Length: 323
Image (cartoon, rainbow, N blue to C red; front, side, top):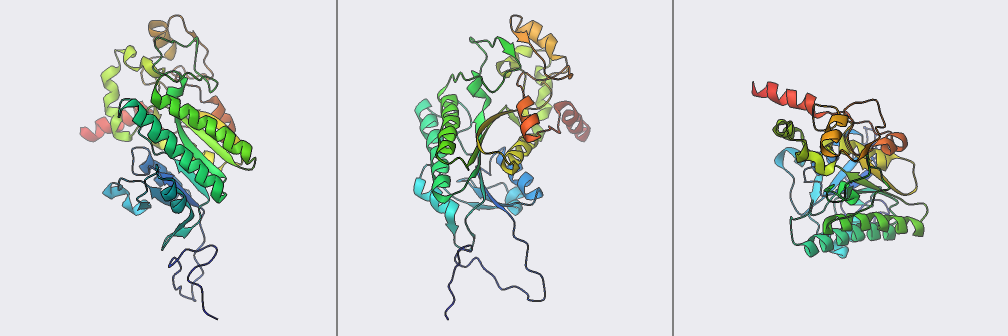
């Protein structure tokens, strides 16, 4: 009987001859990361690879030369639904089907493009990912939302209390509006399929390791970082949060704040609050005197999120390397 060139689990030309004297390679769970060539994406890919996942990067931009070895990059325009559903379903010499999707790709902040371009691009890409996942039966999805959903910058609408929690919703830009609507789409897609899981991660200001050298610049000017409650998120800790979201047994739609455990200054947060937000109630959730203004309690309790990095230690590493 003639052999089929593909199977229900393998794409065209994906299969290879194997040495019969050796055990078959262990199959890994497969995750697609959109925007994997970006600032956060490169650390996201490394995190998933280090924890045993087969990772594919969907991005129009090729990865940096140092990142090529971690994941194959597939050039996909996520605004084109046909390209999205094709890329998530079947790639010749690649794969047939994926187990999970981490959606990071977006115009990454306000003012990077005209307002309508940011909104149309980001909301369209998110819809295409969620809809293609629904059609293909991919029930494990994590999506990058944003701290901007809180109402950042915290002026003129200053929060009544900090740290701010997930119930805050006050988008103040086309970018943050698209992020909030992405969260709402997750709610409806999981209502349509109660077995699905769509986790939205509200990222704080993402920092890559080399950026900590700049933290010295604002130590005497707390207003510089007042716009997001003195917070940041290390790209590696952010990647940890997404992995935990994908590996969790949760079902339904969930939103989690993700930031680092400490503020971006050397002084206690209570001092910063008295100076910058004197009329805002400070309600710390931990005994860390430098706890940030974005609550990560829910992520700690439900995902097991535990940030490993802090800017002061990373700053000292950079200073010592320069000496």
